[in-house]
Image 1 (cartoon, rainbow, N blue to C red):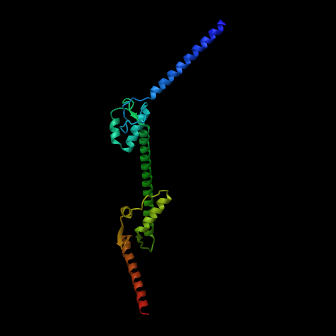
Image 2: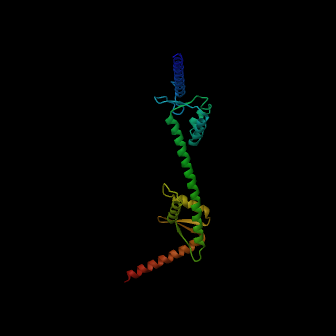
Image 3: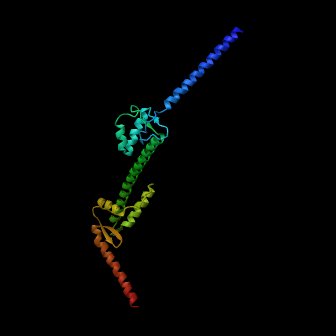
Length: 226
């Protein structure tokens, strides 16, 4: 009987001891998550009713600095220049930190898209220049290019390369780029059209245009005299 009582006493003491340990762990966990009242969010500067979390790792500090640079937030970078966020005991709202991460992500994606579009644009322009040069070198031709047609070719080729243009191609800008790449090319307005031709082809092209005009006029005269 005495031994049974001793065993019960030992078991009871162990049970109480383990309960104290669990309670201690819970208390420590709770205190690590708690935030000091009266502090404000490092990002929005407000305290509000939402929970404020304290920066506890240098990984967060490093990522915040990277994001601030990516979005060009000078005000945030000025605050970061005061020291690392851990040493500053910086507090933050979860939504504010996530908003910064999202802004940085969209900024980087937009820059990457712009870079890709720029590369594709240069490729398509080179192809367009090659097309104009090859057409110009064909024997017995005096090619005259409509800028509107070249703009359509440019747009179609960009779409084939997977670039969805958000707006219509700037024809004036395209013309300037073509003239810069092809020194002998000249532009001439004819009504609402902008025509492009090489210096040595302009005379022949004008001659053909005059011949066509004369033929058209002769047809009109023949019709009138019937």
